[in-house]
Amino acid sequence: MSVIAASVLGLAAVLLAVQLKGKSGEYGIYLVMAAGFCLLFYGTGKIRTILEAAARIREYIGIHPVYLETLLKMAGITYIAEFASGICRDAGYGAMGTQIEIFARLSILGVSMPVLLALLETLRRFLS
Image (cartoon, rainbow, N blue to C red):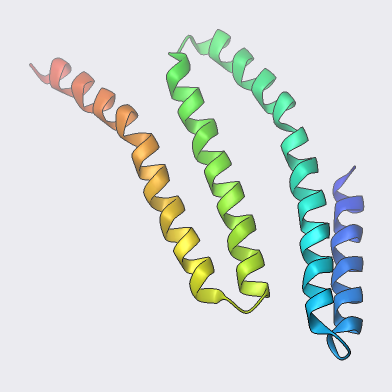
């Protein structure tokens, strides 16, 4: 599926949801959620390409694998949280969407702490 196909799927779902809004709005939300899940699962299918590229980058520059794993975890957390938050906002539950975003930010902070500590340790050794 290309970006054009994904865009057409999303736009078609939204246009159908708008048509259903007057009669039964809940079905429009379900339709948009179904299209969103299709796009989410297709997007996660691209992970193989990303992982292969990350492995090649790691070979080229010789960094510790933990750093790239952390970067990929942060990207995954962001992707999933944005998806869930957007659905909550579309359904009219903006407060829940905000809570998901806050939890995602805290999760990213927690995942990135080992990298930050390693950086500070490197700076401490360099300055000593």
